[in-house]
Length: 286
Image 1 (cartoon, rainbow, N blue to C red):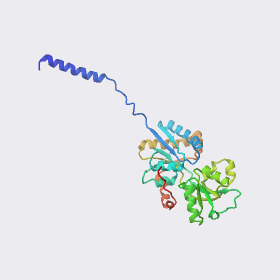
Image 2 (spheres, helix red, strand yellow):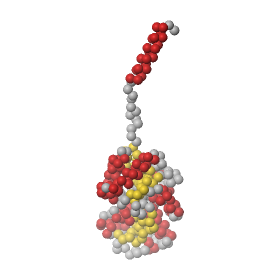
Image 3 (cartoon, rainbow, N blue to C red):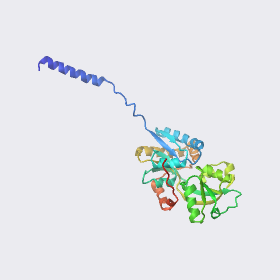
Image 4 (spheres, rainbow, N blue to C red):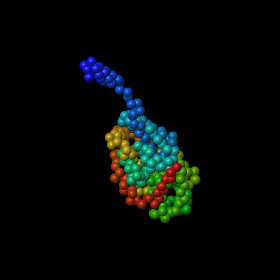
């Protein structure tokens, strides 16, 4: 190769390198910030549920710098199907359902209310029923087949402790259970103490508690294991920090949560030995 040709080749190579270095990098517009889904068990009707949880999710975004999409299904059955498919990144769910899907989805509990829960059976205030045994053969309203405090524990105790066989009427939400009893559409209803306290004074005043179940850990906020550990910890700390201000505590009271504490799966594993699986109804796919 003669000298002039070598000079030309070197020059062209330098031009190509310079052109490459001067071309501005094109940002990857497809790689936006991750949006995490939050599912909430529909204990209440949709408007009340969104009124309680939307401010919490917005506050969570401010505390973490993350983006969340609140996803509340219309029915508990639909919520359970979504859990069993692992659709939510984070969720607030029935404690026993956490146990039921532990092997398949492995949801990791992060926080829960410090106060344990108890299931209840309520009747109309003027009802002659005084004992759960007197409900034998009667219609009893429940929110859904797999609600731990409102259905599973009361049904288990009705059958095993009081030898009472009842006709269950599933009415979707705790609020609907109490309304059915007040309107005399069911002889009794299953709920939990915390959701009864969330009802109007007129509803509470029209009902009487005839039975309380054993206590159990409160509904947890849990994360799917696909969520990175550092993100899970950031969300846990954000929920715990809501305890520290009057505004945060007021938001949590609407869930209702008195005070969040850290929890782990060990807090819930004890329920797997309660024999409730015989009352558990696997949800059907759509």
